[in-house]
Image 1 (tube, rainbow, N blue to C red):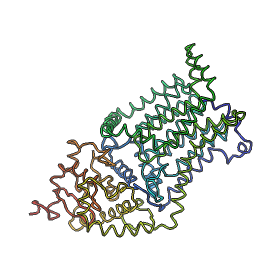
Image 2: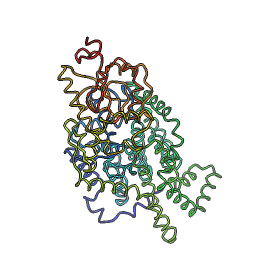
Image 3: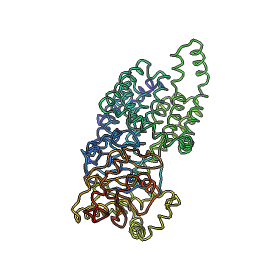
Image 4: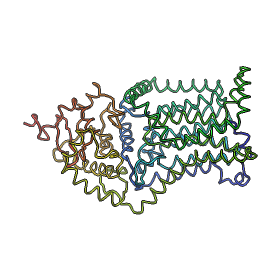
Length: 587
């Protein structure tokens, strides 16, 4: 898509003269705001599936203890996000979990975006801001473009997916607007490498877009080959000393096998969830092709007749075909996502189309149609994120903070008074009626279909985790023992991080037994069998926790099950039997 000619006329003199209005200055100020907000403790509203951020803290604690993602523990996505988060956490230990997890990709995206803005700003400052403002909305506000719960709250889940969407946004912005070929090649290499180690579906979607750019002549074949060569060399540099790349590819194959039955239906789910953007994008592509059908037919016919790849590339390098590529890659990427900033990378293509709309002024009906459809594609994601941020943060004035003593920043959340009251009641109800929930688990059902999204469940998990830390410390002090390795039969395992202990190697983090936990082998069995204490939450019992127990029941056979407190059972290694006065070893 040719954007260079139109961009030169979009610069306004007052923006060009105002140094403070430079997009690079605005980007730098945004980074400064992030640094300030990361340095101070904040209490933010809890959101649905908030506990997803615990996965990052589990990974950071493992990395700090010397474990290597993929190599030493199974991960649901690539290792890059965990390393970035670990570094961010080391610099900003007081940052709020939902913010630091969301912002941890900025060390990658901000430099790449700065290069794009530097190149575009020389031709059109307004176009540069057109790329920058949406990027900042999505990169700074930790919200998905879809809600999963009626109450407003911070989105602690979908972080991997938001990160990949933001990287693809940077990739598309570069492919559409960057004119310097060497700079474009460097950005493509960096974004594709980051996507590969971040989330493989993002890499595949980005690869599809890059392949289209190659066909459209935006990425010359020579530069594409150079990019591929450098990318493969980077993989080799990682693989040779660590073996991480091959292990990562094996893990991807395992995840595909675990999710093979749901992949097909998820294409339809992704298309239906994104219908509000996909439909206007498809219609706009058809409108543009029809309005320019004579020129398109002529160019394609000439290129095909003359076997001229350059003419064919010029014909392909048009807005409607870019939109089709975005639709295909967007649906593909969203097939495996629960929570995301879906389809935000359509915007650079839409902006490129809008730069050509002044030429349509002599055709007012077409002009209005194109502008309306472009707005229908671009505005909903931005408006939704801004609206959700406003509802969440303005609503904090009537929230109450969680009272805790052991959670650190993970407990810096607030909730509505009605949620707090329900939490108090359910914390008494669950232990008294545990048999009821055991019976429910036996039927294979949760209390509600959106149980893990319920704010009260998330707050109860935090409260019971804090109590469990107290219970473990009390047990250790009373019996003169120390549990060095800790595991949890649950989706998350915050205990090693909270208590400065170790997590067992080879055990999956983000342990969703239906999607992201492979059947344990001998290596995993040994690791579980050697673990000092394995925590089992019971307020309330859930199907996923029961499935995890079944997976690891064999290596836990020699562990001694105790009631740690009203909301936690624990499986203790037999070497502690005598000290705890339990089992045959105590006799």
